[in-house]
Image (cartoon, rainbow, N blue to C red; front, side, top):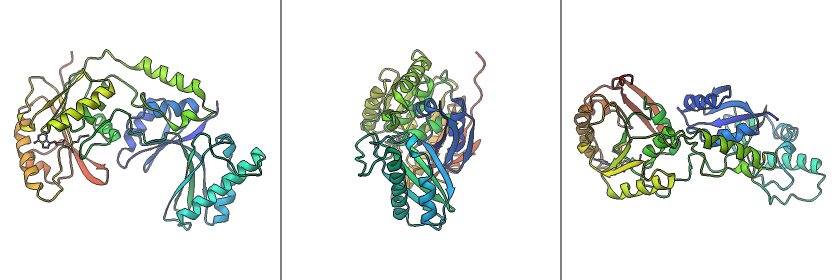
Length: 378
Ligand SMILES: C[S@@+](CC[C@H](N)C(=O)[O-])C[C@H]1O[C@@H](n2cnc3c(N)ncnc32)[C@H](O)[C@@H]1O
């Protein structure tokens, strides 16, 4: 089967996690800013889309070359084997971006790439008229960085964070890919209790349940490349069968999500039902300072309000102080809090074991990590 150059794109700061996932799928990879590159066949395209929890998208790299003039961009684009990917009826819009490059007009780059691909396909398909573009979608991107053009085709369609379970959401939901990354940065194991005391729409508890039962995050959604003729239904069926075989639906879990806002608790419940965890995750309305647990060696991951809005800061900082006291009772637990508040450790009253810089959308945050003792070996 043909091997393709694949790129899993990653949000800033999550590259090493995406690389770890790609390796777990069995592919050697190289890590760069915002992307993980590896080689794989059609099967790898299906498996990557189904399994990667922390990547944004999976793309095929069709070519990469230096382009200092529009002529160069045109000729080198036309020289690529587009017919290997695009059938005669393909719909192929071209998007673009340009950073620190001589060819800075994105709209011109897009138009030139489109024209070059049309010419290439015309001579291959012996076509004199326009292509109707009424077939499967192949979203093409021309990305120029320091005069090097990278031409890719998106295999995912809507971003991989769209798992399909979020039927409703609150004000500041975590992206599912970031939620999965936060969990992977903890020492949580499905035998240990898991709690999110700021659960909002339930993203962290639901992602934890998916990880805990080894359920492929993309199992319940479609991908653009499912409609591509050269991948074929059988490849997707095999990848889905593999995911079904690897799921551990009988793995018991102790996952709870709480939130002060009863409307958020209802939304979280709705989303959990959609994800198939209606009976598995417990959601309760509760103020964080009321949180206690008889369980030992649990893992608590929380994305509290950051207090960035005017008038909110004092209230949020008071809550951070109270959290320090409440969580000090959980002496065998590991606590992980994501916030943009740089005074968090002082307010919470304890220096973190470790901090990790992460971006929640465009907000620079830190994951404050308080590692608890290891559970005794059972
Ligand atoms: C940033 S949102 C969490 C979003 C969530 N991670 C998601 O993906 O939807 C913060 C949540 O904290 C809740 N909250 C605010 N103050 C709280 C408190 N004192 N105790 C418990 N929850 C609180 C809010 O109702 C809100 O849902």
